[in-house]
Length: 247
Image 1 (cartoon, rainbow, N blue to C red):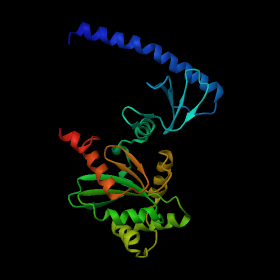
Image 2: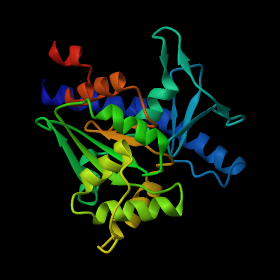
Image 3: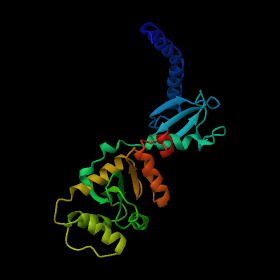
Image 4: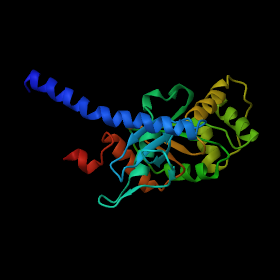
C-alpha cells in the first residue's frame, strides 16, 4: 500500500475512534460517581443496543451511556447463537502458559508428552480424584500438577508430603487413583506450596481442579474427558478448532 494512503487511513481510523473513546471515558466517570468502590478495569462500547461493557477482573457487566443501570447476566447474539458474555469471560481468564511457574509443579508425562496442560489440584478434592482416573487414559500429554491445598489444613500436609517424596508424580497417582496412603514426612523445602497458593489467589483460582491449556484457556472444574481431548487439540492448533487449523 502507498505510504501516504496508509498514513491517511491511520489518521482516519484514529479520528473515528476518538468520539467512542471519549464516551467510554464519560461512562467510566459516571460509574465512579455512583459506584466509587468498584475496581473497574475497562469500559467499552458493544455493538448491541447501545450497551457498554464493564469488566471487573473476569466479571462482565453492562450499562448504558449514562451509567443509569448495571446489567448482570449473559448477553447472547441471536444471529450467531453466541454467548457473548461467556466468550469475553474466557478471554479475560486466559493466561500466558509460559508465565506459569512451572518449576513449582511436578510433571507427569505419558506417551510423547507433546500436548501440555497445567492443573491446580488439592489432594483432598473428590472431583480431582475422579478426573485423575479419567486422565490415565489420555496419551501423548505432559501434565504439570500444581499442589493447591485450599480445602483444609490436612490438604496442606498431604501436599507437602507429595512434594517431598522421592517421586512426586508416582506418589500423587498412588494417592489420587489407588488410595495408597502417603508415606514419609514433609522434610524438604515446601515453600513452593505456599507460593502456589499465593499465585492462585492472585490469579483468582477459586476451586480445584483448575486447568490451563497451552493456548492460555482456563477451565475451572472437572470436565468430561472427551471435552478435555477437544480442548487439548484446539490448544495444539493454536486456539483454533482442529478443522479450521487444517484448512
